[in-house]
Image 1 (spheres, helix red, strand yellow):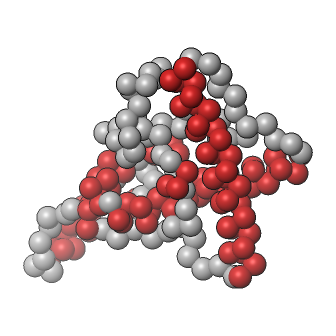
Image 2: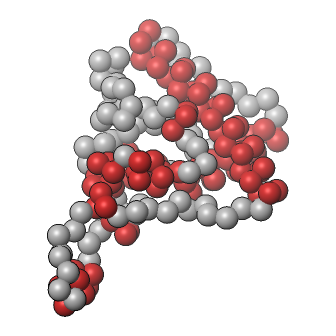
Length: 166
């Protein structure tokens, strides 16, 4: 899909670009818990299997005399990262900060490109070590934010129009 300034909407609208502050320690699961109206589009993307009602689940509820009116908005989701040691938490924060810094630069470059037609000039890594650290941060963010599901969720279709994967 090609974009123009008028195509891009403010987040979390359809075809919007998530801002860097969207990517935090809690992950997409926590964001969806805070914004439950967005859970429904993610139910069938495979990113959150607990959002999909199963026949066994509904039959169990029925046999217990409980309501089978399933609502994905009421299903609590858990982050993929639950417990970290102090060292792991420090590494996690360092990787997330690096990802956010580069994501911000690339996001701004893309939006400038869309609005002016010039560029985009994405971030260039200064050293191999920085590139490797970024790759590690992308692996972490991929665990917390399923980009494919974010792009394919019906009615959501959030855009990541610049390189994230290395």
